[in-house]
Amino acid sequence: MPVLAATAHDLDDLTRLFGGYLEFYQVPRPAEEIRSFLGERLARGDSRLLIARDPQARAQGFVQLYPLFASLALRPSWLLSDLYVAPAARRQGLAEALLNAARSMAEASGACGLQLETARDNHAAQALYERLGYVRDAVYYTYWLGL
Image (cartoon, rainbow, N blue to C red; front, side):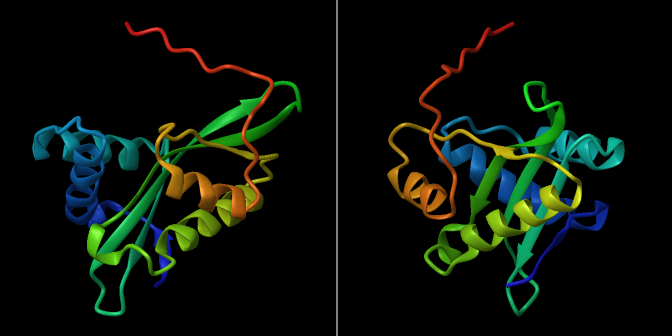
């Protein structure tokens, strides 16, 4: 399945897929809010969205990345914030294709790395990340301050 940079023409499909992503994490939101959020990301260019389509051009998955800087490396990096594959398209290598496309995009931008996090109980995702060379951080804790 080809993975391409998403554009405003992909917004309907992205909204549907992102809705599934939020359902998976048990934080559903109205489609209008999702569409507005994603539309802003595309319009502002403050994230990169990649979308995967099957041979019939149906959108089956996406990945969203945000630019960061790795201060200790003095180089740019990327946060792989969101990754989702529609249930009917799982177990076909699509998540791996999305991750590889994200890696290629990051490498082409001169980034020193990709950062991601996942739920502690998402063992299938963890196994995929580790198979692709991602290393679980054993030095730093992640904290969050809700505002």
